[in-house]
Length: 197
Image (spheres, rainbow, N blue to C red):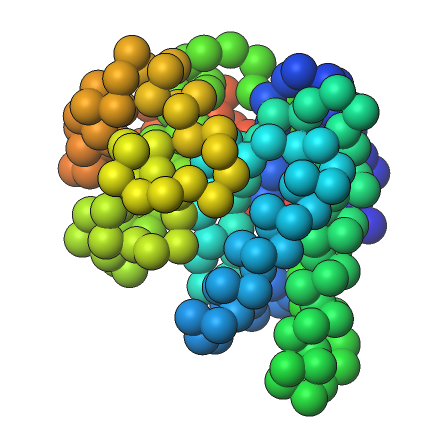
């Protein structure tokens, strides 16, 4: 397993990412997506982690989180990934590894990184040709951040507030629909490192 290079601190934001073992599919059915989201909200609350933005893709997921007082990212991710693995293996009547090793984590050091990361997370389904627009992908909280769907985390407002309002965030995301490389060099480097592992 790769060594942990990022120590999560209270009050800070982090990008957390993991994928299926051998890049295999994690979520085969709507039930599986729903189960993961249920565990996500349950363990986030128990481990004092706020979910700011998320997107579940067929073989991986991205989370933008904030560590609250007494929060533990390690505990949260261990409980989330092991809990999902147990339930899905039972559901599929199989045994074996579900996730590809430990999760990956990067500190969100500034507002520009935060903004670019939010857009990257919510555009993931569009860039992967799973949806024409981010609003068309059910398994992210993009619509929650725009105030167009009930929030599962209660923290969706953080994104819209960072942009000065939901409409400004919506415009920012749509500006990235036809763009090429990620506009934040630090984020691009971090993502390249994550995907290479």
